[in-house]
Length: 179
Image (cartoon, rainbow, N blue to C red; front, side, top):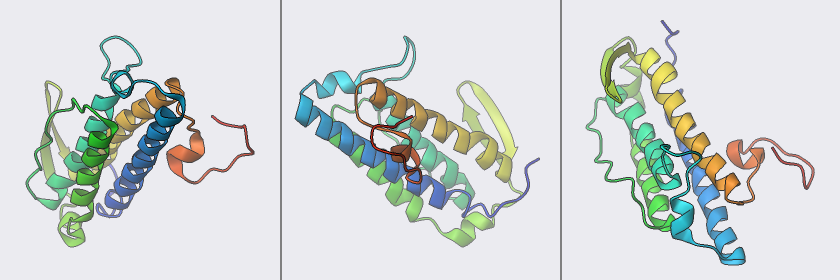
């Protein structure tokens, strides 16, 4: 069992920060397409390997996990996720903005009150029942960062000029140095 963190502090600020980071990546992708040309549709359909989600689906799923992480903790209805088949970077930006607005609208006291509560959720075809801190720390946040990381990797693979500073917003390196 995980320690009992402040569930609001462990989720909302983290998710909001990285949803904003992803918005900045999509801005860079749009600028790259404007500068170098290329197909926005092709970019959205890129995948790291056969059978993996496309860039559009990775962003959509990351945004969905931000909502899925918080809705049960706040005991609010999960917003409709829609489909992950965005036809443009602007649609993905809108999806991220909706997730960000939802996460930032949540009541901190309601989320803190979820400490110790058991939550039931579906992971693919598996059903999980986890204590709220386990749900957040061992399931929801790792899934959010998995899909976010895949989106970052796809954008890098497509030539979007991203580095570790773009991912976390903290690191700084000399020009020309990137991870």
